[in-house]
Image (cartoon, rainbow, N blue to C red; front, side, top):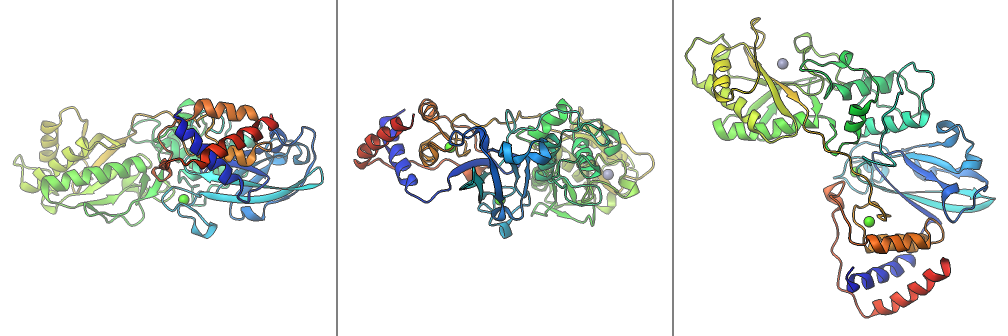
Length: 459
Ligand SMILES: [Ca+2]
Ligand SMILES: [Ca+2]
Ligand SMILES: [Zn+2]
């Protein structure tokens, strides 16, 4: 590590330590069940008694203790889990980052440890943990299963609601550790995006988090269920079926730009999925849940095709080609049309893309696009020594260490931080990008010796 950086880091640590802080400080991510394990904190001895947990500062979020999730009395364990509200731009909760999905900010509480009042803070950072501690594990939890683990279920509920999946009927997924119909139906909609074939509905899924489902819940490119918003390249005429995964919305966004560039025509999306992914109109009952797209076509194409490709038909072919070629997270796996000229045109332009000719005529007025999942990107683990979970190990982590040395952290944590200094990974969100480190000053020398002296005394 460059010495100038180290010097600045130490100065930053001293500055931070002079600010008011809680007795104990924890960090977690928006889409996680954030575990707080007070009995495992270095500054609290094993066998301590915990009481009077004051969570007034966590209003709007869900907090569950080990009594419910681990069959363990909180008064002995000091364990609880924080489930940040997943709503986007949760300004009523004091969301500090309107650009990052879910809540970000610092929540504060207090409790008695062995009768003595202690304060703690939980700082929620963007994203979710996709590997290791904090990720969602493969499990056997299922609706109607007697031996469901409440903690596993709560983790699954939190991740699903963070990713925008709701229960059948539209109710948000409650985080309560109970595997009821709410989480079952949300999970099946989630699975529909990647399990099975082109016409997958919730009925084709198993509602159990096996290896594939766990992989997607943790993936960096996990599907997010959301409402479509029109752009300059496409309008939306769908009344209720205007929801889909982020994979499909990405494909529409990128494909429509290419299509408009090729033909000058603004695309019109006529149907995706309903708000909960259930109960589509009968004519869309074969839409793969959360992924499939209907694109309107001009009225002159609303025939069976006559062997002569009209300008409007040729444009539909160009639109299809644009969607095939769009480098989007969702990808075209099949087109459906009831117009033979469009069918022939797409086949000639992109022979490798499967086509289905609908002899019922049901696809005369629009082009149906079956959308498949992208290649899964393995979930991110949290960096060792990245104490504040901003995806880089730098001076700010030393500031955290300094603030809570003797409480959350030990001397060996400092030594590990030194070795890990400078490591980083792609941020969980662009908003948490690394900040520039300013030039050090001569004051840093003083800070350095002062801190090292203090560190030794704590070991
Ligand atoms: Ca936010
Ligand atoms: Ca950091
Ligand atoms: Zn369709």
